[in-house]
Image (cartoon, rainbow, N blue to C red; front, side):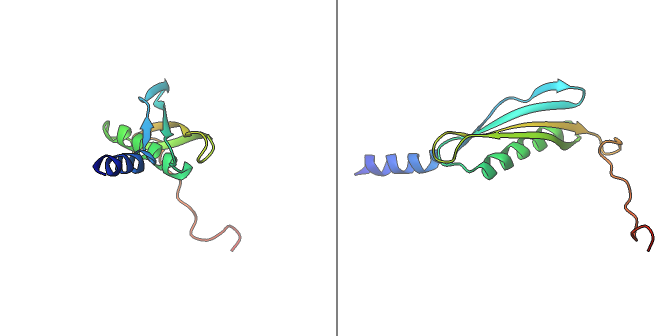
Length: 109
């Protein structure tokens, strides 16, 4: 009975686990990582964990994460859900990170 309970607990925990890759530099301030959802992990859960991992990586260098591209694959319940995320780590004053001020009124108003 204890063995059956242990198997049920391990199966339920492992049913929604995600496994991340190492972060790999792919260009100037640009990196890639992949996240694989095992078992019944949803695509949304896998994507969010990839974004969190990218944010944590950039935060270690006191920079901010800016996503560039995300590619998804896998079929829920059939094959692992995967997200391949390409992102940049940019300083808060980097022109590619800052956004221009939006006009308070639409033009012509």
